[in-house]
Length: 217
Image (cartoon, rainbow, N blue to C red; front, side, top):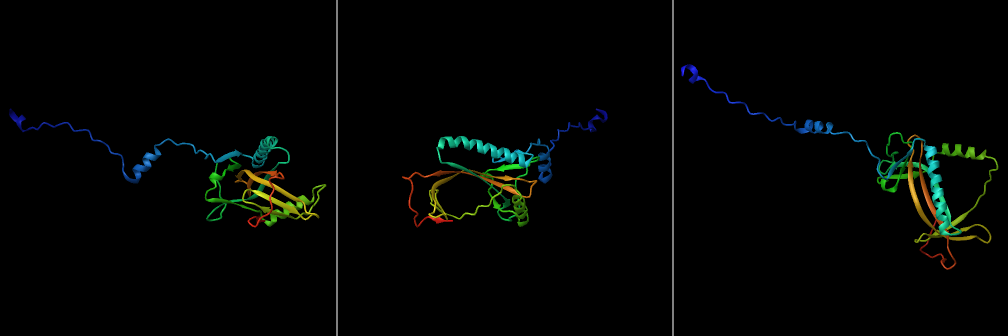
């Protein structure tokens, strides 16, 4: 037995399980290890292209062609109104200009679903309005025609318009909004709102007298 009885057998060490760092460092580590995914535009926000003017023109041509075909189905006398307004898309609380950021986008179409918390404020500065008016004054064959109209609208989207002719010309029609969207133009001083409506003249059997509950504007 000699000196062997004083020696102790050394048991093999159990493997030590490494634990991931906890707390904030652990969260940062796990997030940084995740694969990076490219940001996708929301379905209600669409990159129209890099050039704001060309993309707007192409979109307006598309609308014109679509509604031209629709007019053939609606019948004679119907008119499509395409209204484009300049202004700014602003935050609903701060009134500061805002809009989605999509890299490389010169024009971004925003449907109403993505306008929550935002609003469109129409109008341009006096300086820009005067500059535009000066350009219009120089156009050849330009004419100014002054007219005064008065409109009454009814809750069912029917309206009556009269002018200042003698006797007054009376137009009774039903106007329905078919499409509306905002266009954010990040590289331009203003944004744009496009509204498309159909104006349908009413038949004699549909016409009605202006009532007390009609709103004048």
